[in-house]
Length: 263
Image (cartoon, rainbow, N blue to C red; front, side):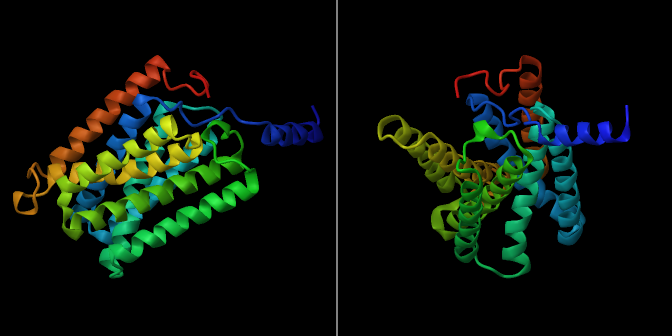
């Protein structure tokens, strides 16, 4: 085989479409998604307390880049690889929102619309480039890059929105109730009002972040703040264990394999 043949093979490999690398959207998907949001919230706070804000952000950024590098390197959906990347996005997305608020003094009332605008910009550029925002067609590197940019923006937006409602008078438990009700709206609108499936998915995806984060915060914070006072460490460990159990089940059963259910 000549050098030219090797170069041609590599070029064809780059051009060849990937298998869709986003898992099938099932009940398992939503359960794990909510768990990752809560675990990311408490893990971020725990790391900042143990290491300090700057080392925690640096470690979170390194872990995020490493996990996404592995996710981009594989050519099919692998449950462990995908959900590890989601967890790292959750942790770093929380840190991004907290850095704006704590480090730079930007209020949640300002950061929430800023992150909403960032997410809208990602969607606009993604749609202008690909003419779709569907997660059933993530089979090129460019679409995968758009997908993860949107995921990171949703986590930062959801963190800011959850903290905004919690500090605006609702408290953590009130925020849980609010977002639990809100996440039903896209599903009902899709089922009964003809809301586009893609719009319903991304709307629910955004809401899972403040829902999970508010629930984890409510479990972790002290009673003076309206919580259960379980502590950051126990909540982080318990939610991590739940994530590991569910992902292990999906990895063994392949129930989240893309294309398994009707698109």
